[in-house]
Amino acid sequence: MLNKLKYKISEIRKMFEIHCPDCGGIMKYEFYDPVHKVDVFKCQDCEKEWV
Image 1 (cartoon, rainbow, N blue to C red):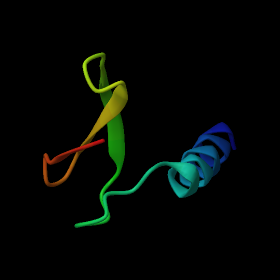
Image 2: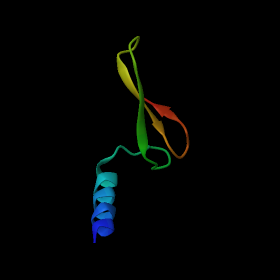
Image 3: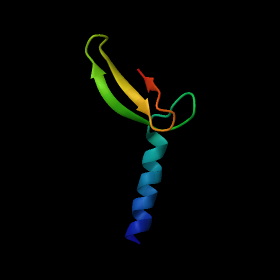
Image 4: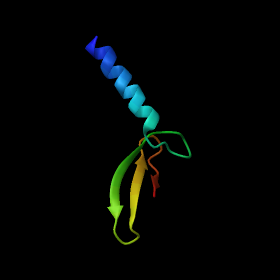
C-alpha cells in the first residue's frame, strides 16, 4: 500500500517538472550563473544545458 502511494506521488511530481525542449527528458537544476543572472538546468537524458 505504501509503495503504491510513493509511486503515485512520484508520477504526479514528474508531471510538474521541467522537461527538455529537444528530447522531452527531465531537467535538473545545475547552478546559478551570477554573470548573466540566470539559472542553468541540465537534461538528464541528452546532457544539454539550458538557461
